[in-house]
Image 1: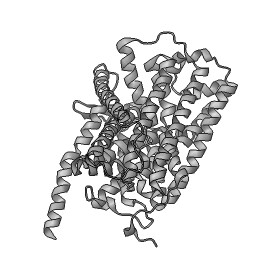
Image 2: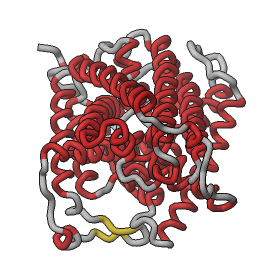
Image 3: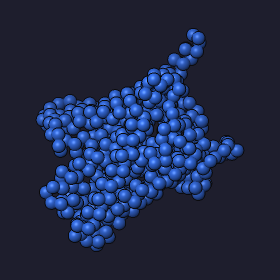
Image 4: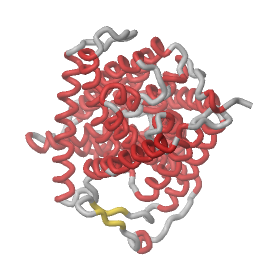
Length: 479
């Protein structure tokens, strides 16, 4: 039997690391967001540009934070970097937000989509509309939550999260192997989808540039901000590799390589799949599509497309749920080891996995599944995530000044211009997201101000931090 006190071991190589990056990124977003983004933008040119711009800034973020990852290849990722740069308080707030908003909301959103399409085969019924509306949780100045809405789908999502948590609890290598297999499978699936639409779709390349009524001025700006959030949701997950840095073999080499390769692969896939959608569906038809991938494939395959697309989405999102569960629990594990969270979270199981942290994540994720909807969860965690990425880029600049002689096996490409550009872009994106969220809420376009809801949950960590500090001080005094 392995000794849990020895901690986590280096069991993840380059290809498994790339599979974590690609597998964590490619999930629900590319199936759920293109139609909404087409409606928001009203232009095929802007649609493709948003996917490219969001991909490039995600790549910039990956290359910037790779510098920190190779300096400190330790389990915990941004939490570890923030602790060394900003101290315990800010690192705790990030770790808390990662547990309470970023990571668990991301897994909940992806699992929700996976369950929705799995229900195509399982047919688990929910409650009637009257029962769904019978329980409403009102959060002052934020909005309303409906825990009984889509209850059948939520139950399936909870089973998915629970099953994959058990897999990762019992075997780190098993979770990594599942991730590699699922990632290879989803890349093959996307290649087949793209090739099938272009070869058999009998579409029109004029759809790549033609739009009946593209927006202008303020409408275009609002559309770009909201659409960018959708694209960032689809690209999110690349940071996961930093969370498991302490378990990667040759991390100084494999972290930047896996990030660069993984994000570039995803940019190529996302641009090609959106071009494939546009090839058979003009942007106006894309905008009116409830299930964009199904509508595109129905032109190629006819009535059987629904079954094929449902199976494809289940395959792709299962891998994304696993990749995110596998990686994100390491942040909570690192916090537990540092006694900046519940100490049990920092213990390894007899299977040499962060067992208690995995359980904590599963429980909180299931609560999010019960209370949230896909769009709310996606928008909420994207906002908090990009706030963390902004601070990560700031950390790179600060450490170059504070610790200029510290060994850096990898240095950020384009320093200092790329980090500065990334920080400016992130700041204005976050600012416009808050403004757009409030406007949409006031106009009745969304039930919750998603960005402020995410900030509220994050700030709830402040009293928890001071309670943990007092607990630790009391424990030291009594020793």
